[in-house]
Length: 81
Ligand SMILES: [Zn+2]
Image 1 (tube, rainbow, N blue to C red):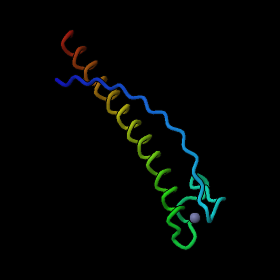
Image 2: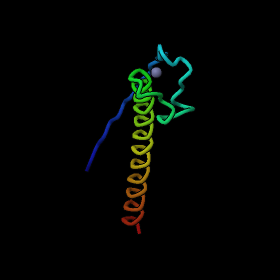
Image 3: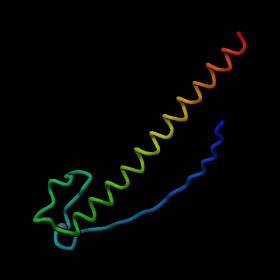
């Protein structure tokens, strides 16, 4: 038996802009639009990619929780029959 208690609350607001390429937007342009390997743009992109990774991880966790909950529902139903 596994008993998980997950209590997450993350709220961060960050506004960053490349000093050389102030129009670079990783959300719209992606990593391919980084000019000349600019380290500031790359860092901004990595920040955005990290945000996406956290969101995907939370979605995967929710999916697993839902899946395991359905296992429990089947097991409970199976015992009642
Ligand atoms: Zn840049």
